[in-house]
Image (cartoon, rainbow, N blue to C red):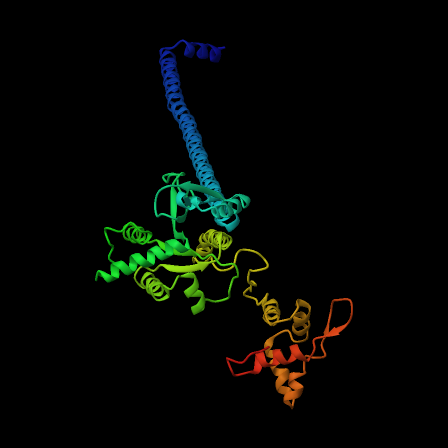
Length: 419
């Protein structure tokens, strides 16, 4: 009991109160430390969480930015590819248009099409001769354009062509005048020209000088040649003759030129040397018509021939029949070249050339075969018995082609005729 009492007494003692105060203070201290620790521990976790979120946010935004840049780059690349494709397509269309225009121009320059753009201008003085109807009927029958005019050189026939429209700046209706001019005169007009020339010569005038007081055709011709540069005038003298002779003799000249043969020859030489004017003697308007038709056809062929001679067109047109053989780097195509070389000889068909090149695929093999034979006769007849495949019956190359091929490959004479 005393122990219990002492315990109870201890419970209510002053020291107990102090200890309780200490406990309470210690508890308070622990509680504060706990709260401090909790306060110290909670912000780092929150900051770390915030930092991780912000870091994740930066990563996400960086990925989005990179993704956006990649999308922009892909879009720009697509735009560039689209622009390149459009440029290539436009270039291809322009090339096709250029080829189409070139083909159209080439087609227009062909003689059968270009002759439709030519117009024959006939001087009205020629209509006074009834024989001119032959010329007009032939031109109308050929459906060639002709026009009657009352200007320029009298008794003349000239040509103009409709200019081809090359560019948009050029005038589509531009007319180009040809340099060829025909002057059709009769027998009496030729005599007048001879007398006019003789009169000027007797007056001691300079060669080629015009006589102002004369109104003859010769004076008109001199004026035309003086004022118009680049013209080529040809005089067609119509001689009335029932029977055509092959060449002019002295009797014919004396008959048709009324004893003015020497004066006429002097005029012809003068026109040829000083004015570049040639004189042709024809029998009737039918021959004049034939000359006009031939000259018109020659004028229609001239642009196409000039274009074929240009370096941009080349000699051969495109096509398998005229194109060369393509030889690759590996030698593919040489056999066809060898066949073509044999086929260039006269009277050699593709089957005969194929027979030679099949037996000897290259020229070196054929030369080696020639060297192995002892005599010249055997070499010439080496290819004669080769069979030619094709045709209704069997045949051989023959000694003729065999000899020509031998001369082609073994001859040292560059002027030797192979045929």
